[in-house]
Image 1 (cartoon, one colour):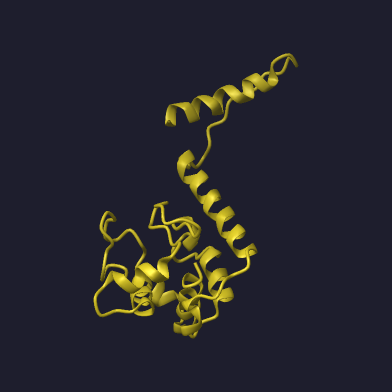
Image 2 (tube, helix red, strand yellow):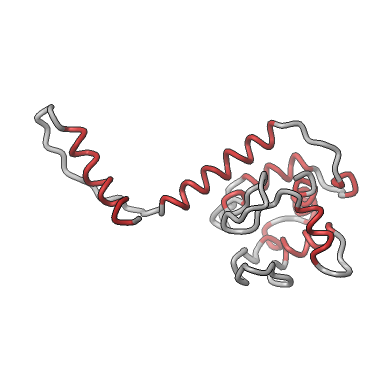
Length: 166
């Protein structure tokens, strides 16, 4: 895949100049983003925007004290300390894996994930201490462990309220 990407970067400018008598020097990008990552990030952002445009149905979020709209904004906002936004790694309209697990129906799944924890407790722990319970098939340390430091308790509750709407 990398060779194809490099070949396209080299050949495309040359083909664009054909017939115009121009000499084009191929350029090498300074930062390489694998096509899958760039595509996945763009797809996640489009899906999050589409989900936000759809009317939200009544969900268990009513039991959560946070503001789902503010939580959605936090979810899609680039966090400099983490070096990405939540939607870089998580789909919101699917349970399929992007980098991390897809979050559609996460409220239902979270309620059954760890015995003795309800959905709110599980999601809170998953945000502030993601290594406490690692979902099968995912490596530990995949999700940054800094959200408990960079988000206030109110912001964490907002994120949970948003997740419960998915």
